[in-house]
Image (tube, rainbow, N blue to C red; front, side, top):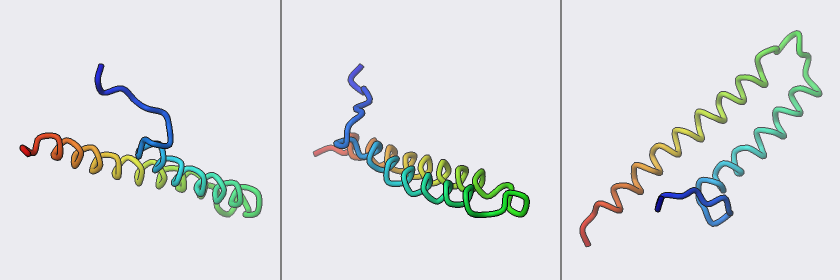
Length: 74
């Protein structure tokens, strides 16, 4: 149980999630409110998919690098 999840701003994954989620929410809200939903029906969904793709790609590389640092002999 040493690999517990820390839900605080000290955790880099939480900060990155917030850095991506807040602008995505704002841009998505603007798209929903001000653009024609008949003309751009998939714009909010594609924005959400882009957010999750970027975050989990970053998280994959971040955790892989973190594991490499732990394995390095000092």
